[in-house]
Amino acid sequence: MIDNDVNVVWLKRDLRLSDHEPLTQALESGLTIIYYAFEPLLVQDEHYDERHWRFVWQSLQDLNNQLAPFNSQVYIYYGDAIDGLNNINQFFRIKNLYSHEEVGLLTTFQRDKTVKNWCLTNNISWYETPLAGVIRGRKNRIDWDKNWLEIMTSPLSQPALSATTLVDASTVNNLSTTELPISWLTINKKMLRGGERWAYTTLQSFFDARGKSYHFDISKPLASRKSCSRLSPYLAWGNISLRQFYQALLLQRAERGWKKPINALISRLHWHCHFIQKFESEHEMQWRPVNRAYRNLNYPDLYVGMTVDERLTKWKLAQTGYPLVDACMKCLIDTGYINFRMRAMLVSFLCHHLLVDWQLGVKYLAALFLDFEPGIHYPQFQMQSGVTGTNTIRVYNPVKQSQEKDPEGQFIRQWLPQLSELPNELIHTPWQLSSMEQQLYQFECGITYALPMIDIVETGKIARDILWGFRQRFDAKNEGRRIVAKHVRPKKKIKETSTIPNDLLTPLSR
Image 1 (cartoon, one colour):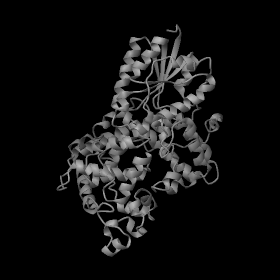
Image 2: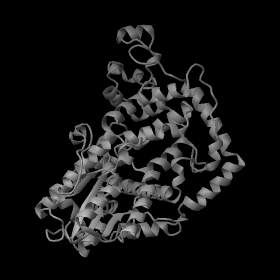
Image 3: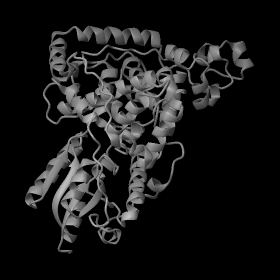
Image 4: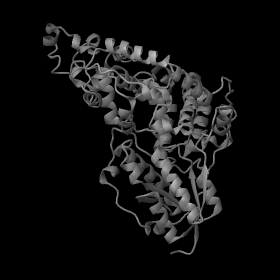
């Protein structure tokens, strides 16, 4: 054991070295070790997939590259978070633990309570920094937007990295650890790579040109892959802070031709924290509808010869017979990303057209989204499935979405090559091909590509009748009033500031 006090910065979903208040505080307090644990309770959780841990590993390697000039590195541990802390505490003497507050799953909430007790037992002070504009324990939204704006426009917290205040790499290597799966260490070229450097590179490419069409292309499944910021996984895993992103957007907005796309993007940053705040304030929505009346919502069994499990499986395997639905699922499985509109359509198809309970699909999509953020995922999934009792019920017609958002079928052709020879007017509804057309295009309905598993005209009407009818119930309305009082932001316009701290260009020049 080294007879020396040490501060521990516990990384979770904040895998960066810039604008990092816990790291800043720790370094100001003395010798510091940066720590990350690949926890079995999360690695084995159904919400997560290998793609997430590969992204995290890449992010940690990026941090180590930045720490190398200071002769330091992150202590990476595979095991329970407390076991890793015990390893540090046996080698040093932990004085303080620093971290960001985490708005996570029930498993991480319980884990944090255990860590708190461990800190008390070991006489260790634990300092937690709020996550972006999210306020722990908030009961309403009065002045919430004002607080959010103050945080987003405040100066960045830039840690003073130094070889004298960071535990050296050789000492970190002496701490106990375990091998990570080889597959995590292998690059998947179809998915975005993790790390601060890649976050800044992605943001700069957005500013260089591709983001100017953001507001036009945001709902298009193919064009959005280029025109959207693609920063969502970097925000979800904390390779860049929301404040860094927001302030960089304010700077870019002053450039010619950027006002409309930047305003459209900034509006989505507001609801980013808004939804995480909803989850923080009512985390029970992980296992029940936020509108508790909807626990009594029962879907009728209308599908003769097709069980719930069979319907769910066809949706998961992209075998629904609706081209845009299947193309989106295949794209998501392969790359970890589709745009917001297509995510909403996937949820709507599952819950509205297939009449499958939202809780049977929520973990599956979480595991596919490289940018899975619990605080956004659960409120959004419930909103799109129509079980909040307060949001507009949107039953998406996948054929209409296909014709409007992918009119030439480019996205469909990319992910469903068996449809590539069909003309634009038929690619959205291949089951309508006549016998002569099937011969012409060497296409056999039900063989070359699956026939539609349901009739969306019928199922759409059924879903609307069920959901709008249930919404009129007294208990659903009563719960709706409670939800509005707790989660809805007052309709008071908060003026965006144009005052930017002098250090804003620092993140983009790293």
